[in-house]
Image (spheres, rainbow, N blue to C red):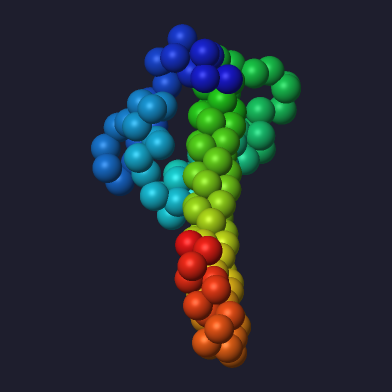
Length: 123
């Protein structure tokens, strides 16, 4: 897919100007979504006008453009969700470690002086 895009020298008209394939990775999810909607609308318009079922090079480029934008959009969305989940897991892990530390402290506090002295000598 990306090889074809580079061979066709695909360019995308966006609110930031004309971009090539690798520049799409810098767009926000909203910008990619807007771009995908625009290309999808063009694809639907082409489908309605062509009664012979022939596909031109421009049709092929448009479908390829849509597939690329959709792929980048889905990948970036998945990465954002993974990052969000990683932040949640890290916060949960820190909370659990904090509770473990408090429980260890409370178990030490409940030990007798002799036991504490013994433990200290072992260290």
